[in-house]
Image 1 (cartoon, rainbow, N blue to C red):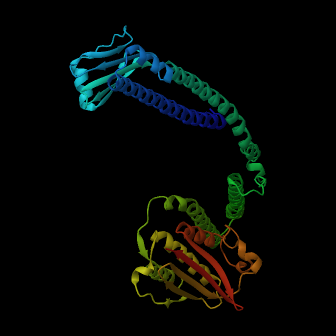
Image 2 (image 1 turned 180 degrees about the vertical axis):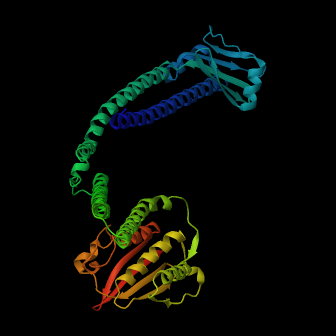
Image 3 (image 1 turned 180 degrees about the horizontal axis):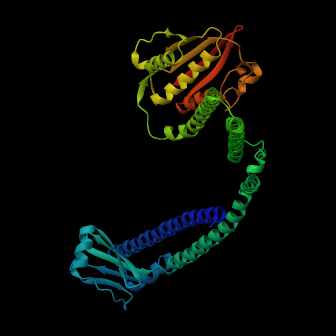
Length: 451
């Protein structure tokens, strides 16, 4: 069942329920009104019969004539007067068959007025204490019951007609309001991985469909960017892998074709070892980029001290780079140590900080790296600075793209993956990293963790 049919049926069902309850309420209220009105007329008839019998002492025929003349006679009316001795003092007509037993009279005396039904007739019995007598009137409300029946038939027809009309109109209405959705679906269906540049047209109306189209276009922008990055990544990865493999193959073939002494073969093996180590480093970097999302999905991370991770990373960098000069400190000392805590994977953060330190060390003029820590209730900020050749402004937007290497990296070994790894790790920790350049030779990377 499609959405249009489901919505139309649900809307029709809702209207049918409302109409049914409304019609039932009207019928119930009118039926009660008819009954109360008829009992009121019966009570008036009983009161009039009692007054005419006891107060005027006129004959039964005269009482009947007065009743007809006053217009109070009801259809198949029967009237009774029962005196204090519990005998029928007055009965009209003579063929009336209703018999009031002692229990009935006792209940009427206790309640004052009693409504009852006798076959297809309705009646009322009223007790008059000053005479210790009872007046009973019965009749059929043929006109009222016929009106109730007519009203029931009319309400039933109106309810059925209303439901049918609602069903027809709801199908037309749903078809009209879903036209934009159908058009949007057709436009979306025309978009595939081969034409991700195509976008869904957005109307000027600020409605829900416009919001859906805008969000869909935003999703396409993200997908297009992801596909572009993926294609670029695959292209550069294949190129970077092909280069050391081709170099290793060329050196091996040359060594096999030419006879060399021991020192010559050692030099070839050393060159092959260097290429192999570079290939291992590249493979490890590529594997790291593909595995970080899986690490992030492993579960909730514990709270760790950012400063402690930085100190451990600095010690590791000093062991690896003997001539490195690292200065680490607080630009603002926090009052509470807990302000330095963030939820993180310490191994990932060490990898990110180590790549930033290594990057600052390799591209500095004096092998000096300055690290500053600042923390408050909302964020933890780490800056890594060095003095060296700055990155041109037109290259900064591509700084964190895998395999991208700027002009300042010329002559340096590397694959252009370090900053990509840093960016991905920091984003996994709901943080940001960006580059700033000040003066003529100051380079600064700023890492910010939002709490």
